Length: 175
Image 1 (cartoon, rainbow, N blue to C red):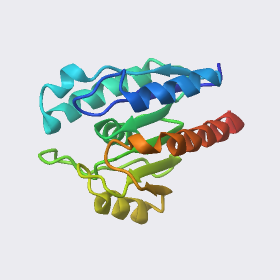
Image 2 (spheres, rainbow, N blue to C red):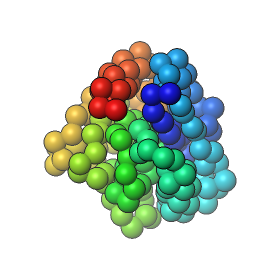
Image 3 (tube, rainbow, N blue to C red):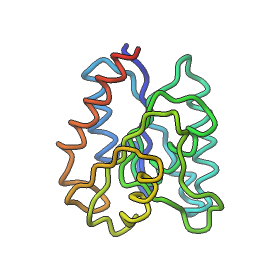
């Protein structure tokens, strides 16, 4: 095995969601071990109420591993992946359709500055407006790929997969 990847789905979704499932299949075909935590019970608490339990679940998953994993997240999964990187070591972050804040949750989105992160967002994201993640990426000087797509990024899977494979190649070179 090359390494470990944890893929976190968005709100009102599941570990079998399209993006995380397709990315997990790509990673596994390249020799990576993947996990997809199930946050559905946490999501029943509402958006703001689900953040802390999701972070706790993801943190416990990471702490059970021997080496820091690469985290991949979509929407709420991206938010909690970034937030957990502040507290536990991670190898990198691929964040899709990231909200810059969760209304009702006390903290704005953030990531550990030393962690390699790539953000991918849709120009037409109606759920998580581009302006927030754009401002965050600009402040941190993080790579931000903006695609002609909406929040689901369903028309952009080929481009997302290509970025993901590049990230995996970089991670394999570091390991």
